[in-house]
Image 1 (cartoon, rainbow, N blue to C red):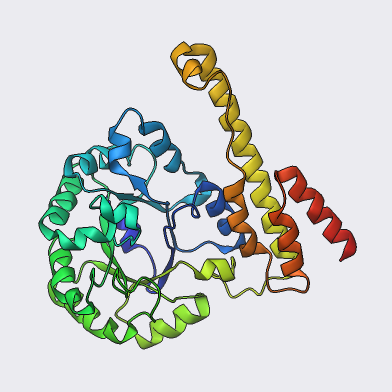
Image 2 (spheres, rainbow, N blue to C red):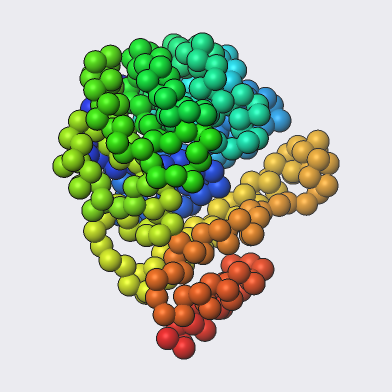
Length: 344
């Protein structure tokens, strides 16, 4: 089987959910799959050096959890150590992934301070070495997600040329620089030139565009305008509309049902983690000592970041969201939702 089929079999103008730290975990992906899945999922970021260390491996593997509704899915990995890229790349097929993507565009200061993410734009030789090590360690297709440049838009031609020369399965370009973050409109005016560069150097590489893309309606308009683009990645658009990969206009009830599904999945994952820790503590005295004899479930507060995805766009949404933000656990959230349903 040609391992590039995962990219080759996607239709022109396919959609992708962007990898977002603390957002696109295995729970949220299941909710989006229910609402209307994209053509391709990416995981949130996994640090290759965390996987390479005994201390960080368990956390890395937790980030790489997938379920059947995720398929097809790409593992997004980041770091700066070529050997660590190879080590993690070598196990991703066995973990069930359809491909792996090297993050060379994340603008996070912490990530960049370690030399990873968008900082790799400044070290092109190291970036190439990481790509080659990953490719040599796996039969899965290898892709890269990046930005136009680190500081200046004009960096794009040299930087993208470097990447395209590596015979990538796919290249996702966020049409801003690291310095621009998301403070300026994405540079759609450069799309024809980026397509031409891809066609000249690596016509076999799928080109995905990212930045300010909100929903399927916009994707179809852009595909008509830029037929040379293969796919479109939606990131922040999912915060405005979890049905963004469809043309469905959600009702208040449908959005609340998605939130309840999210809560159910969260509770199930929380219980599974507690059970796993309890079993390990019974079998591993050193681990039990490290945990001070206490099991620790999933932290609740990060769950609050998702509330605005489901609670917006209908009468009373702001008031309901404010009440949910005061909750201490999922039981309280459910109680508030039940009260809201009675009032509504």
